[in-house]
Length: 107
Image 1 (cartoon, rainbow, N blue to C red):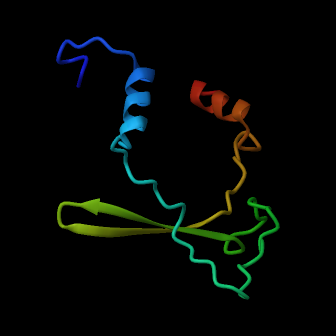
Image 2 (image 1 turned 180 degrees about the horizontal axis):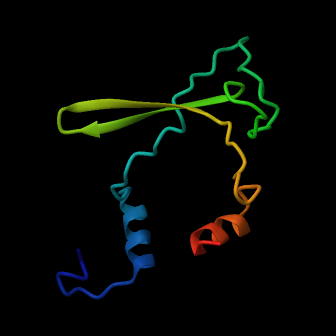
């Protein structure tokens, strides 16, 4: 605001004067991390998948997520569920980046 008013002053000087006067700048509130509430004595679920996100058959490993979306009418909740099974690319043998590039070229 001072710069817009044409007053030339350094940032450190303003900080020092504000500190001396007991003033603080306005700042945004910090966001909370996640919405999980820790309860004493309750253990969260462990890793049931074992970090294996490529199952051998369908309907073995599913993942889900939920997201809050603020709209003009209020909060909406978007929920998504997906089966993690991906069959290999039958024509090229796998889903590697090389196979995907070859498929785009029409090989």
